[in-house]
Length: 179
Image (cartoon, helix red, strand yellow):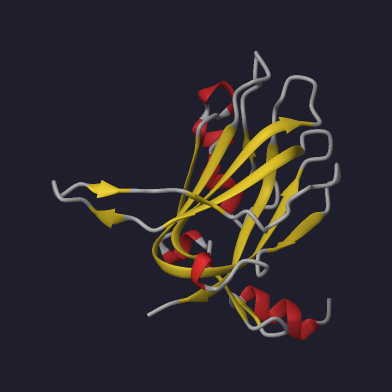
């Protein structure tokens, strides 16, 4: 990467692809997961995967004892965004093999509560490699309307780890903020 690219990415802008960094915790984005290693959220919690300031922080899932339970990782933007790209840095040996991506826009229900309906992004193909490198997944095969959301969920159905654990050092969502 050249110096301008690094400066722009640090500022949260990818000028080459005309995208904004949407998943920064400083912008109010939060994360939660259905599984955290040893229930230790301080060391292995999902917010660690959004922390771009600490190279060693990560999210670790617990193992899947029966091999039949999907592990979910949810990024909540708390604003309306259009996603274009997902970038994930796994720990080699603890990489998700089968990933399904869902988006949701929360709406207020008739009873006043918040209702979230997840919609699968069927045309977005995610097949991560067993690697420590940052991997990019293009989500623009879906129509722009289908990529409008305020939350993103990734379901991991299997892992390269024998016990079914997944480790993510960095998870970045890039796209556009909508008005």
